[in-house]
Image 1 (spheres, rainbow, N blue to C red):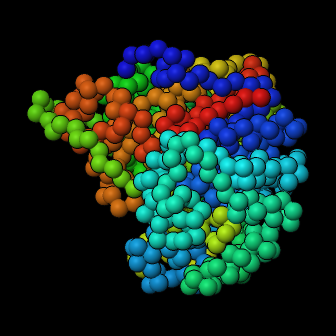
Image 2 (cartoon, rainbow, N blue to C red; image 1 turned 60 degrees about the vertical axis):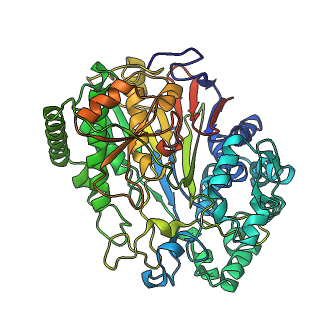
Image 3 (spheres, rainbow, N blue to C red; image 1 turned 120 degrees about the horizontal axis):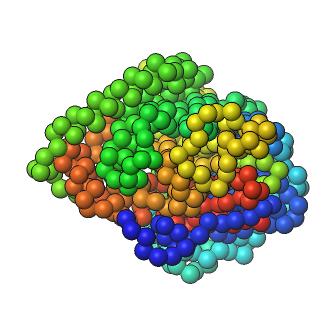
Length: 573
């Protein structure tokens, strides 16, 4: 598509820039909360946690203290650590207690919430500022209120049926039984009080203090599964883990191990390394088809093998081995050749995609001049999670069990203390030194130059996105945009995207490609002629995620990008 004017190739928004710090999140008010930490002398972790808590106030339909999440942290010396706080099933959970509806909505749907434990671990070990100072921006937003945007209004209007049957939820998030209109002020005094309790009593009040007691009592009174003991034991169950790693065109990509299915991102990139994407049209049918086929096969491998490694063996080494990647590449070539061979003028026209249930996740990133960088993907599952709000606390509970199965013997079946498989895939990319092959393009760093080689490899970028099972698909496309197509971080995020129709309830292997409407009509016709089933999304669709990212430059500048498909905003300090 031709550049239509504005500050960047794909829209009116420029790259955000800063030298001391950068924050990117799905809401400008949450991003400002992170910048306040830099202004107060805090570091990237302080900024990330302030943003993570603030975004639960301004995006209550996507995340909450009652939610679950995952993080990737890189230290100035180059070490990367991952932290999975995606919750666990309560100790009394069994598949026969659920049906499809109670997995999704109501008091049985939540897993033990992990967000607060994850925030506590990150802040306690790597933050500099006092807890009360980190929480203050979120408390102000909850107490004084925040203006509702058009995007906020639409999200609530589409999921209002999850709130109206539940008085606590309706009282917290609706105005006289209706969604707040754009421009109206949403105040959450109950959540403000909860956050003040955490500020004064400490993070662990959520699990074995006053807040935890309130949560446990609510579940007990309403027939839920989460107990005081489930809450008390959760924080000690999470642990730091090494990332899983693969190389792509001179970059080392580090991301989260199972039960995250982020290995799909690494497989996709390794398959694509055999394709000269930089020589083709970034928005053309050939590049799109090659990327889509690589994503499809990696998706199927992840679906077949990834689950909680405490319950099943996940063959990560084999999935990333040269032998397996060669097999997948050969299959991609076979499928591409077959598609070109059946190309004809007779083709099924692309259909307009139907509305689908929205998955409720958010992503944020922060980095500072020292090289400290963290990104967090956190979620409550579906829109407003389980629909359960804990009394007057303002805490919305997740519906993590919706992503599990009820099939006995299945690797993803609900079981006591089991973690759900999750497509959440925060990524950190590191420049590799001494590698003889340079990337196709530069995007503000010189990963293979002599100065860089002398430094021994440093973080180059961090990327992540919400979007349920589109998460690994979007993450791979943004990385390809950076590395192969030479886009800046904002354009890599804003460029037209696609995904396979492969969410919960969709058939696997996926059969239909969903394309944003900004892909040219001749590209759609070319793909359709090769036999691809296509559906066309809006020009800017939340179904392909809401990515946030930061590029860390050798020149000392931090460059941030945020997704215009949502309220996303990046700001530098």
